Structure formats: structure tokens, C-alpha cells
Image (tube, helix red, strand yellow):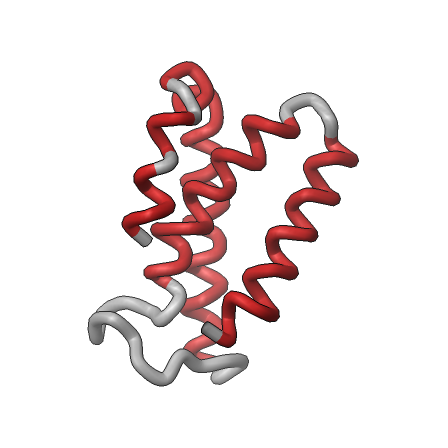
Length: 100
């Protein structure tokens, strides 16, 4: 989580201002989805970092947030490129990264 936050200053102040609100909104929606998924037992994280947080909180507040800012910076104005890069990164998080 900390490593991903260390990359944020390299994005640039202008890009952070431009994309932070949409990134926070997306993160909020994913947190709501995680809460619902936990209640309905769609998936579980066996060792949450804190009793009041979901297991996904560390991923959402770390690599997901920073990664979303980077993806938006590199794909602004190119929806097809955004969808492709987002799919590749999400696939990486679901399969190899999740096993770690």
C-alpha cells in the first residue's frame, strides 16, 4: 500500500487535481460493492486488517487508488485505450496479485 502511494507525486499536481474526484468516487463504489459482497458472502478475505474494515480496504486505498490515477493520466481522451489498460490491470489484480 505504501509503495503505491510513493508513486503519486510523480503524476503531477495538475493531473491529481483533475482525476482525484473521479478516482475517489470509483473507490467509494468499490467499497460499497465490497461491503455488500461481504454481507451476501460472495467472497471473503480471511484476515481483514482491522475488524471495521473489509479485506479489500488495503487494496482499494493503496494500489487501486494510485493505479486509477495513473491509468487516467495515460489514457485521458482515449476511451478504448482506457478500457484495454483497465482490463489488463484488473486481470493482473484478480489472478496473480490476489494469490500473493
